[in-house]
Amino acid sequence: MEYYGKRSLFTFIDEEKRAIQSPSHRLSFKSHQHTSEQDVQFSPSRPSAQAPSLYSLVPSPSPGSPWTLSPLQTPSPSVLYHCVASLHRHEGVVYSIATSRGMVFTGSGSSRIRAWRQADCIERGYLKASRGDVRAIVAYGNTLFSSHKDQKVRIWNITNLDNFRAKKVATLPKKGPFLMFNSKSCQQHKERVSCMAYYHAEGLLYTGSWDKYVKAWRISDSRCVDSFLAHEDVVNAIVVNQDDGCLFTCSSDASIKIWRRVYGHSSHTLTMTLRFQPSPQNALAISTSLSSCFLYSGSSDGFINFWEKENFSGRYNHGGFLQGHRFAVLCLVALEKLVFSGSEDTTIRVWRREEGSCFHECLAVLDAHRGPVRCLAAVLEIEKVVMGFMVYSAGLDKTFKVWRVKVLPDEKKACLDGADRRSRLKIKTDHEYEMSPVLSPSWVEKKLHNNDPFH
Image 1: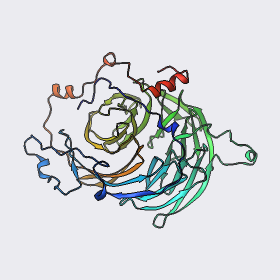
Image 2: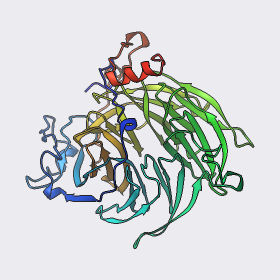
Image 3: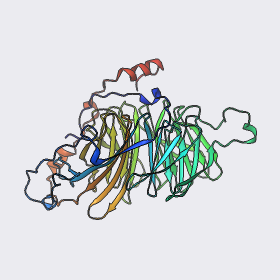
Image 4: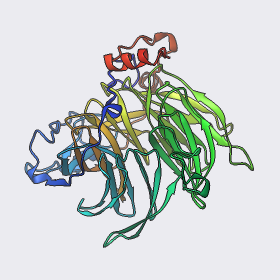
């Protein structure tokens, strides 16, 4: 597996703008025992040719076990993964997933946001809005934010998790006395809200839209405190660094931008633009710890670029890119030292960052769906010797799946000599890249129609 190298071919299918609203249908539950090989396929396990090590102490899964040992032979921890459940929507696609306090929320083309219990994925209830097509949801504590096809955001309060009681408490923008007869507020997005992020410390909700704008909403009084033109094309993803409030946005204009609030004001200013590859940027994820901060971006050429923050200057330096996906990376989740990536190639990859360095390696490849993986969410389940994660994925094949992923302890690695380490971490220089990737016909047609040259 090469993690640094020349760019591969890719396609970019613009499924979202061609999607139409579908009627609400319940999701049918299918346990792993009833999942066919066509639904979930695992790579066969492969015996290691190395000398006995820590991994030899871990028993291999029995023939009847649902667990699959990752066959990738790397000096990293081994990974066990298992599809716990597969849920199928007979019509419509799950566009968004959020987790909070033992609950999982899914938004789709219908007007219902369904709530599931994390451990066993049993449906607990649903929220119903007058406007459907929920493309983005964010959960924090007992609060849930959802965006709808009317370009508005609704705020819900979850009061009882056991019996699931929920109530809508606000709509953004709120209707004021001077807006009673206006069809749209001046604070409202002009097109669909595609992404959201919540800054916990300040109670600010950020929304990004196809209208290329980003808006900041103060939740305490449901007011829009700032609105700015962020990109030259649609805003695809937003993340917030909860440690310092730094805002990151990415767009189909191939750029990633870093914004900061002006001290003592509500307005935001652009501090840095990251533009490493001329390809639409679809997803963002941030991983922070006491000693490091990494920003990840998934692009339409199948690469995952990452930047490391300098502790002294706060500047983000490009550290390299992860290569493995064949087509566009559509969603990312960073948790602990792991990165989960979902792609148009129907797979989910599990990456691990090496402690104290920028080196990443692919631990496992999950043959997850029959269509592009649209969204991901992950929670830490076990935090002991064996780290366990619950991973939730939804694809354009109209399925929502639940995975358990276990990362076994680190093996004591032998020290690598300098030459070998440099060869593993080799990064190609700019002139070695091929700057003419092959685009899908639909994406080229879209660009030509908008009279917007490829950046």
